[in-house]
Length: 265
Image 1 (tube, rainbow, N blue to C red):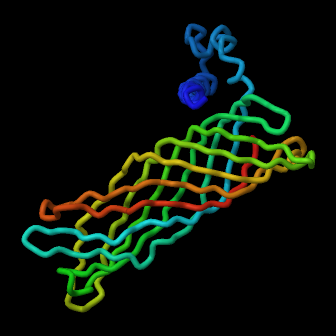
Image 2 (image 1 turned 60 degrees about the vertical axis):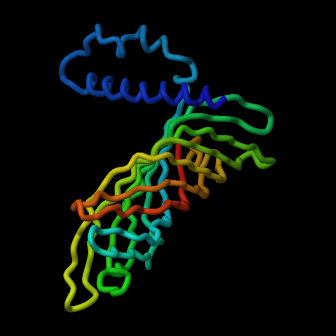
């Protein structure tokens, strides 16, 4: 089943590209070139039946992230600096967009499969810099932004109440983590901050697990689903801006907890 979901996810990636091309073609003032294979009636009719019965989902909510870890930064010719963490929890809103197709349906549950992308805007990590492991003269701060994309398997569990269902879903995929905005500030009058790291985007493995309650026919025939979601977002790092820095600052393992609602659009 996992291989089947993976194949369908790749096909959906391909379909998104087709949709973009088709939208561009129809939005122009010139008629669509009938020789373009992706807009021909023959191509559209040849699509698998499971793709024709998909539905898009829009998700809105908020998340709380945990990131940062204490570490030793080694510097050539010196003992080095210890980067402590004083603030590792931060929050922001989130947006998600998914496309799902129906799978098998049994008496007590129904399966759906698809792709789900999220945008998790900036959250921050703060700490102090203990220079030469003796003097706490500097503070630092940076931000993290995440763009995870998941292949998702979702179970809609029927309850004894016809207007309410329970949901459970799991997803895996890549997370595009952008570590940015590293900045030092002085804690004393005789110390100058020195920004020794620059931003970096890391592509890592990510996983998510969500549970929720689905209210059927919330807006007419449109359902509303609300619940909790856990994100494992993995680890990112910065780039050193000088070759005197032997190892680089990393984010530690990053996790997020989210509360969100979704609607079929």
